[in-house]
Length: 508
Image 1 (cartoon, rainbow, N blue to C red):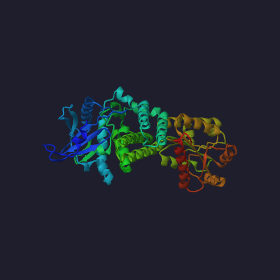
Image 2 (image 1 turned 120 degrees about the vertical axis):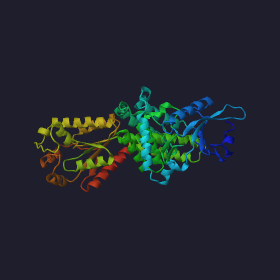
Image 3 (image 1 turned 180 degrees about the vertical axis):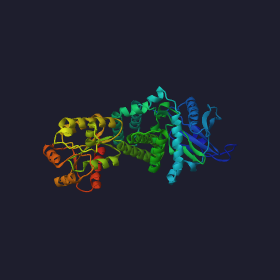
Image 4 (image 1 turned 90 degrees about the vertical axis):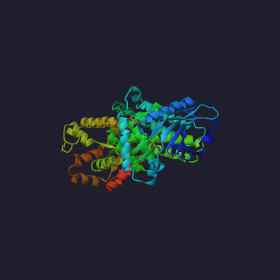
């Protein structure tokens, strides 16, 4: 490859495909793409690293042949065959992938950067990807790639490669936090990944879906350059595949497009994953691109250091968003805890588990049906209360393992119940958050006396009995609910944000 630079410098060429003009060369971390007239030629670099090996001519022949076959699934009229670049000095011919040249102005990346409305294009792209996924083979080799262990291995490989770089591009502390947050998510979500595999969500996909490789033509999008050098990296959860594009669109400043393409794909694929998994896969893809940018920076690309740092920052942001939380919202009757819990859950995408609702469900009652008993009697006896809290925690355990954050709305006056909830959160590798809603006693009593159509059966007598028997809750953050609902919810969300930030640093 000693003559590579000479052969790829702008020069004049003629021919039925090439026309007459200059050769334009684009470089990636693993290839050169030469644009000549109406065609493009892709040449693999003679490189070898932890995730690919193009070090011999034979390996480059195999890689390009494989790339041609695999990309025909997405854009059969673009990939035209394998050509040869001959060396006048007698070296072995270099294989080139011959492609139809598409206009740079129609790249999805160019359209996204310009702020263009790409709604129609994204619908078409999402449907093409979903269709390829639908007709993917499903076999043991592919299914294994969707397991938690396989994803854990891919995360570990990327972190290892980032740490092994000859000089640090990304702050090592940032890499450590990415490692810790990603590992914690995986540790607690075994049943989620088991379910994804059982639902046949693992596919032979694209593997590297980026806006720069998608051309939005008048007759429909052309999706190019799928990952060809490692089948194990192309076998993945279909959600992971589309999240690569979502990550890239967000990086280009189009969060609207990122969210839209994921939602459109999920509709086309009839999929309903937890939002935490979407964020986790976006974080994984941002980490992969951070690693690639580091490699390009070491190859001398002037802009790649900034790209690497920005992608790492994007990964951390989505890993924080992917944090699965178990939030206890408690307090005496009439403090407004149920109102705060409902709005807090709506703002964070969590699911609410209410002790008032579960207590009546277990008794076979409609939650809205009043059922007044003496303090500590009937539906509110100690045994029924224990059963209610046990059921709340059982449901929470299943939801958290499935990647869903939960808000458990109850009084939480018993410290033993709080401890059981903390243990659940620890074992499920979720972030535990404890919020105690507080108001003056007069406010609580006024609310109890005037509320209508509530699932709560609390009375003044219940309030007074709980006030006498409750144990201190030193681990909870107190949130005043004497003002507006909005003020109380914002205060609760601030507690959550601080807890999620702390959860990513084991030194805190």
